[in-house]
Image (cartoon, rainbow, N blue to C red; front, side, top):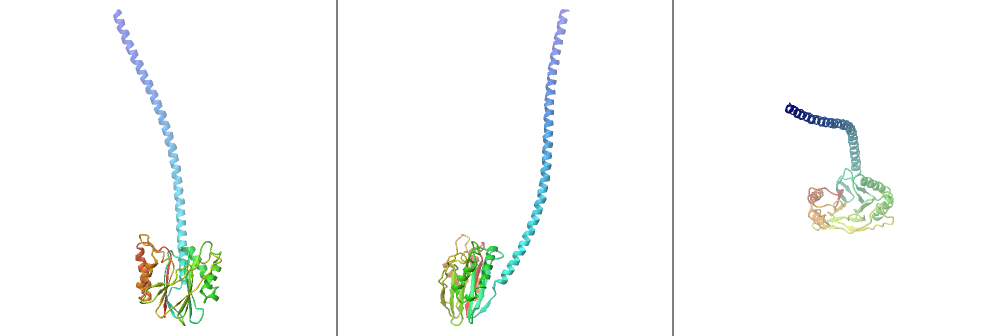
Length: 320
């Protein structure tokens, strides 16, 4: 009887221990489940916060995209409007820039013009101040594009008030300097004014920091004539000198702007004066139009796939 009771007690104790450990596992599982539930709820809350933020950012992005599209449309309209205005400015400048072949007393004039932008700062004007006299002014406003174009237009307009000095190159440039002084803030102009007398085939000229003319005499090397001067529109005490050159029938005088002297090869080597002089010597026997076309073709070969760095103008005066 005692043995049977002892056996029952052991079975009961073992079962009690098993139930105890099972209960502990259940409690641990309930705690883990509770923690998992809490983590899951926190995850859900964070997910909905992020979802709400994403929706808000998406709406903001949509609004920004609509605003960007509207701004883009406005920019396109402004670009078209600016393009139209620049085209009108180009046409106006083209009418003001007498590039067609023309005859002046004792001279035949041929010209070429290449603007770096739609409008440029190079400008040209002719005068006939007396019987048998022809005046040619070639100018270059510093820079290029619209600012240079406006300065060039101002210079050309100022010339209309200086007609009393059309026969005096140095006085004309001095008057132009006085007219532009303090009116073209931090800008300046270079110019070459030539007066040709058909009666004796003589040429007088003055320079305002502009490349001197080239004399092309068939059968002889090209020659750059002497001369120098001060930029126009910057210095109140600027003074200008005159030079004279006797010409003969068949002589050509080439006037250029410094866009030609600012040509660079693909290796960034600048065109030198000697190279330009040799080039002009090789072209000097050509007909005027072929000479100008050949010069520009050679310059394009020199710069390769690049572009001109500034506006380019060449004026060829052929002595009758």
